[in-house]
Image (tube, rainbow, N blue to C red; front, side, top):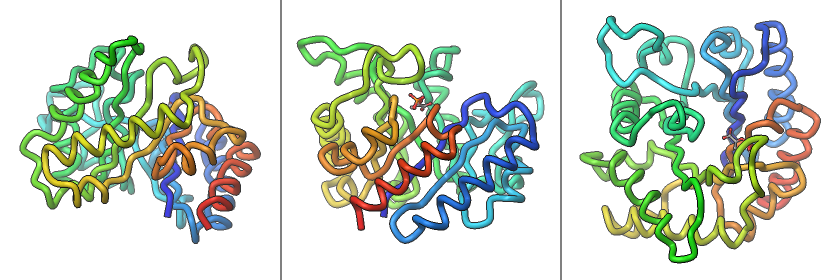
Length: 253
Ligand code: PEP
């Protein structure tokens, strides 16, 4: 079973468009449900209407308040997300980190989600790669901070998404290669194995994200060793997203 997460970012513009997109993605998810769990992550404002139309789809949010105090203007709490039908939530996305979210803040968000039994999708990734591999310490710090004091039994309720910043969005310099993806999946599992043990590490769900398209998707799952994908721009185009899902379903069936 693979996990396919659609990050709609700050789109679509209207609730009517969000419902239309949800219905189209639901049809794709229904056709591939034997092999793929599909999650759609709309902006906060569309969460309720998307949840009402999600049927067998899972709904995710794109962030959460790191605290529960009411005096937190502009944020949405984990308990509000739960009430809006949210099962998953992206935290630590590079676009949120670029607005000032630190590793410590991401850790607080992850803890708030776990308290409400929402599955965090913890995004990690380096800005750039250097020939000496120092960038690996960025990933290690991001994971170690987020998982501080998290008991072993809770790890199965956390997803990690490797998203190299240089490969994300319209300013991406290039997509990662399947070999780079696979090395990182192994590295992330090694970090978890060192923190906990090999059994729990091998059971973790590690996604790849960054300029995933219907053309390159399946190779990240086969050669790249990813347990699924986090898809941004292409998830807003149901035709391309449908082809992508079909191709993943074909390689895992
Ligand atoms: C993302 O938003 O997490 C992402 C990977 O975006 P894109 O697929 O557009 O690069």
